[in-house]
Length: 500
Image 1 (cartoon, helix red, strand yellow):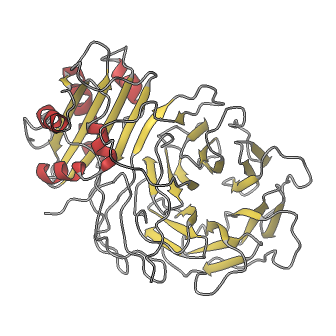
Image 2 (cartoon, helix red, strand yellow; image 1 turned 45 degrees about the vertical axis):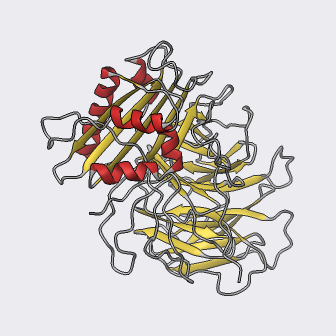
């Protein structure tokens, strides 16, 4: 039997010389499993292994037992049925509010969701993932669980944790001092094979963990942070920290974040199609671009390597020859059959149906290029410098820029509106600058940031956007809904190729 998952440390793959992933040899598996709660419209499921199994694992690590909660069982069962009904994995959109209907005085809550071919394989998978094992061994006092078989025989699971004063075992780890929400990675079945692509590539993502409200956020967004790291694995030494390098979205209710190690984090209705976490890379990943359908994406590396996932086709890369300057950004053609790469010196590389419309390598730049964006027609693009200067090529129209103006922090990216008649510039301090028909909906430069902002992803209607930080913190504005982030978790750095 085969079980594929959305893991906490995204799917390990082997990369080919062209930059495309091969069939994975190892998967770090995600999420926790739960006891059965039977729904009338689905097949029966197992009874008994939920709270008992969790507590046996905790006991083996010297931790106190969690109390069983009928109220949380009900939340878990309801969410599990909703996932089966939609045939899609997703987290409870506002877990804190849901748990408040059962325990108004909770101090920490968490959620694991997943789907697999058997109860035993999923349990084993959970314990092989340090991030999700940490959730099982975390600072909670009560838990509710549900595991229900869908019509195809797969087991869909939800596990809801809560730390509630006066409940559960007094031997359990102390609750966090401030309310936190932890949503561990979702698990998913492997998509059908696609010709010319790896067969049975699992949908895998890192955990969406440790969400809390920031002390001084601007707009409607939430920032992420883990107020109390689980103490279940004191002997584990975390590696040097990596960074989120880009964000992408094709929906007002979901987005992807990409790490410099090639790991991909999928939130909300954004589907995970693969990643490179744990794969030795010749150069760090610097950006992510979504395919028009949202059923795939590309990752670009600093050496010009391109990695394609889902329905995003591979059309070539720039890592076959030495580059004068590293690649800093990527944009996908709206047709989905091409893309551009841009280097720090303004050099542009066009692939597939994406036309070359010019570059800046022959010009003396006041500041290095920081990013690029394509027009809705696919016949042009914008480049933006760290000083806020904007350069328009092809049918891209110039709507303004910041060159020559004093900036509190460098500009890190440009994001176009759906019409192509405007764009947003994003600064490392969370500042947002709107030009043309781009609406200013708020910024994060009024709030203390743990690490710099790295990019902005806009909702399709332009009425909302998200800012992403290098620590995977997310701020949402306008109609863009906050679906999770990873601030407070140590991110894995890129894996260097083996010497020799």
